[in-house]
Image (cartoon, rainbow, N blue to C red; front, side):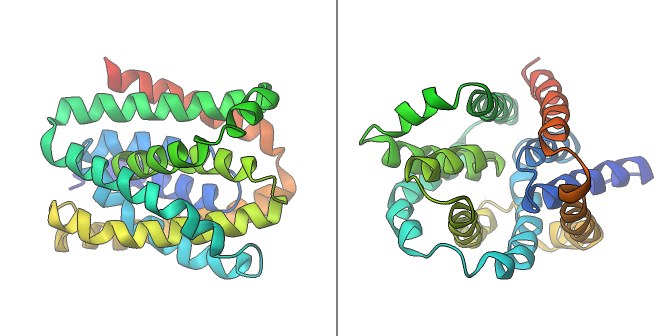
Length: 245
């Protein structure tokens, strides 16, 4: 686990980024993934971050419970479970180096989706209209969330294809990630990525999650969201490129 105060500070920053992402700055979670991978390793970070994500999901879910429904979650779930199974196999069978580079590629792909959605939304809407897109998004979301806890952009694009109101999309995503993250717990436990040692580490980092959620809500009112997210995406891209070298 962590050796000194600087590493603990970095881990708290990663947890803070995850909390801020749950408050509405979705791109910040990718920087958190990159930091956790640097600190704990490509495979270990998947289990290390999971309880923190569940804590964040439990905190934010009540705020969005009245928006959306479970119906869209059940529609997406079978394909997502296939993706989880593929991600489970990858985590259990590839080397640390391959896992690290795979996560780097995943982060860059998610960054590309974020950027393309902002710059060329019409292109993604055409892609989302394809009848096979829902299945593909579910499988891709399952793989990316299992490997790197970074399925947000894929699932957002799927929900966009459903032509749903913004708050309904947020409510469905809150339900989906709460459910899928809980389903990942026994998988990570079987791979020994969650154990008593990692849970003790989670206790140290939980304040970062809580601070990120509440400061993120304040930032939504005070900070231009687009400028802040682009800055974070640049840092995440730099970290992802470093994983590939």
